[in-house]
Amino acid sequence: MIVGVSGGVDSAVAALTLLERGYAVQGLHMTNWDDADGHCTAAADYQDARRVCRILDIPLHRANFEAEYRERVFAHFLRTYAAGDTPNPDVLCNREIKFGVCWEYARRLGASWIATGHYARIEHRDTGPRLSKAADLAKDQSYFLHSVEPAALSRTLFPLGDWSKAEVRRRAQAAGLPVHDKRDSTGICFIGERPFTEFLSSHLALRPGPIETDDGRVIGEHRGLSFYTLGQRSGLHLGGRRGARAAPWYVADKDRARNALIVVQSADHPRLLCARFEVLDLNWLAPPAGAGAQFDCAVKTRYRQSDLPCRVHVRDARSATVTLRAPARAVTPGQYAVFYVGDECLGGGVIGRRDALEAIPERPSSGYNAAFAAEEP
Image 1: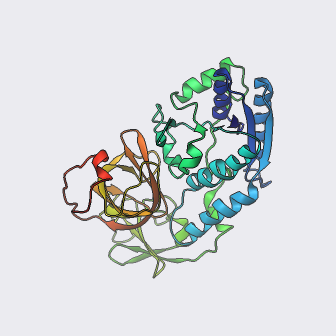
Image 2: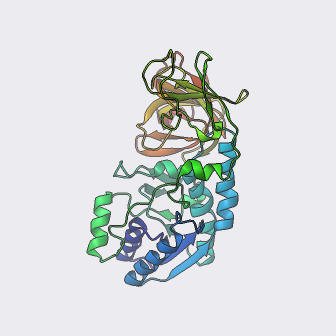
Image 3: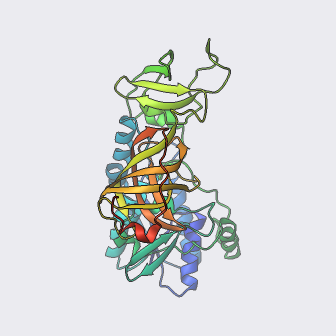
């Protein structure tokens, strides 16, 4: 059993738990980004991983996947921003690195299973792995795992799926692990916390253009569409504008053809609300639906969002159209739509074209089990 030991408390307790269950555990620490700019914590994280493995008395392997990360994750991250969309690199990092090249590396070390400190639950069935939300919904990370190939999930364990973060920290402290109170990592996956606009502008060219109201009035200039996301309120530098209400401005849309950023003064403006959108590059964890099938479920269009009731119309194995039962705010191209029935994660994909608010036809619920057999009426 190889456990990914990042140097944080979650992976440390994952390794501890598997040892207590009788597994022969070895650790693997990977480095994917190592800029000496004060923002990347790779060196300190490795030392924490070494301390944890010494206390647990398990071997620690070390691997560097920086080249693969830059090619498979970071390059895609930049291309998506350059196109004006808003990516989520954590999803791609899980698929391509943690459960991609890292899993292959673990297999070369002789491992038949891999485990991580993710907060999610997995059940191994004859028909394949069943990915579900963690018991602690505030920490659930199934959203970030939906794109992992089923073949990799079928040899994966998530030991922390039934625990809360507080319980994990208590177990780490009781075991004498020095990372029991280590701060959770935030920021871009493996790149760390840093001034984001400054970081992005060092990799993407500025392309200024007009900031316009929804009725076409130019009220400012933006740095480039890449630096803004739907629903964004801060960083617009609009202040008071003659003829406008004394209310905050929100990014509502991007007109890429004219390089114009569209802003509105209501968080629930129809231009910002969405009733229907397309999903591309789908990865199904449940049995794949055939072209033309429809089913009702719930969808998250961003992490920590409440589940949104919806109907999914499958166009083909890799794309679908989603109609929401109630309009949602700031459904953002480039982010991920992840589907659920109850706690079970069905899979998901990248949000593509979105439609602004319009009437949503009421349709009877078919239920999940009938969904994959249902045909377009």
